[in-house]
Length: 439
Ligand SMILES: [Zn+2]
Image (tube, rainbow, N blue to C red; front, side, top):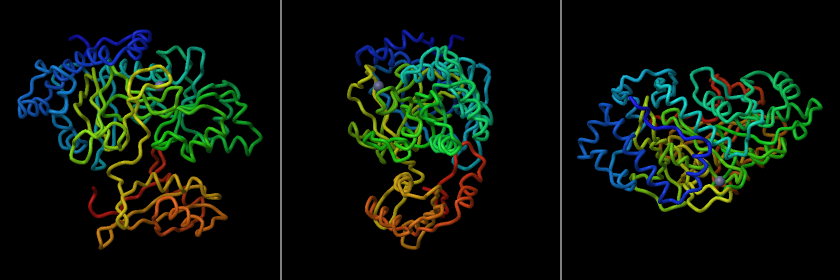
C-alpha cells in the first residue's frame, strides 16, 4: 500500500507555508480525502460516515468537514480497537496515553507515522529558528512510551541539527552536559527549565552566558491568551536570556503545533492537520474567540482520527504572522475543559490561579485541590509551599486579578514538592480533582 501521504522536503514545506490560502486549501482538500478514505477502513468511522450518509469521495470542500461527528477521548476509551483501520500496516511504535478513565490507551504508530512526526518537528524547529549546526539538549526523552521526546529527537535529526539526549536527572549532571557539549537549544517543561537555571545561578554558573539561545517548551503555558509572557515565561526568558517557543500536541493526534520566531502562537502545519475551535454546542466560534481545540490530523496511518476533541481551550489566529508563514496560529492553551472550575458564579481554569501564584514572592511550588460543595459551586483549596509567604498577599492578589477568594494554606516547600511530584510523571501534577462527578 502507498503511504497515506508523500512527505515533503523542507523546501517544499516552506513553500507551502508561504503559499496563498487557495493553494494551501487545494493541497489540504486532496489530503483530507485520502485521510478520510483511510479512516473509513476503521469500524468506528465506517459506521459514523454511514450514519450521516457521508462518502470521502464526494468531499468538495474543507468546509464540509464539520458535517462529520466529533471524536472524543471517551469514544477512544470505549473501544480503541474500533478506530484501527484494516490496512495490514504493522505498527512499529506503541505509545501510551492516559485515557479519561485513568486506563492507558495504546496509540499505534506505523513507520510512515514516525517519519511524518519527524517531518512535523523538523518544520517546527525550523520555524523556531533552529538550523543545522545547532545543538539541542532534550530533557523530554524517548522512554516510558511518551511520543513527544521521540518526535523532538527525530525532528532534530531530520533537520540536521544535533540532538543531545539528556533526559531526566539531577541539575549537576545537566550542567555538566551544558558545559561540555554547549547546547544552543533546550527542550523541556518550563518549571523544570527554570529550576535548572536557578540551580545554575546558586552554584556560580551563569545560565544567560551558557550559549543557550532558544528554549522549546512543552506542558505548561509560557504565554497568556494575548501572547504576553506568563510570569513563569518571563522568569524563564530572563534567566536564560533566550527566546521562547511553546509547543503543543497530543499523542492521539500524532501532530504538534510549534511557535515560530515571532512567538505568537503555534503554527498549524498545513500538510499535517486541520484545526477548528468549537463552542460547547460544537459550533465554530468567531475568529480569535476561545473554545475547544479540535484537530483532524492528515496522513496518519496507525490511528487516523477525524475531528479529535482535545479537551483543551485556546484561540485560533488567522492574521498574517511576522515570520512570513501564512498558516493560522493556535494561541496558548488557556485551560482544560475537564479542569474548569465553577466558583461562586465565576468560571475559571486552574491555570489562571497558577499564573497569579507564579508572581507571589517566596512561593516555590503550589497545587490546587478541588472538591464538590453542596451549592454546586466547587470548593477550591490553594496549597503553596515556601518559607516567608504572606497569606494575605496571596488572597489579595487572587481577589484583585480573578475576583476569587479560595482557601489558601501554606506548607513546607519540600512537602508541597513531594505532592506535586508524587505521580512520577514527566509533568508535575498541580491539580487534584476530588469532585464527585467528573465534568
Ligand atoms: Zn510565525
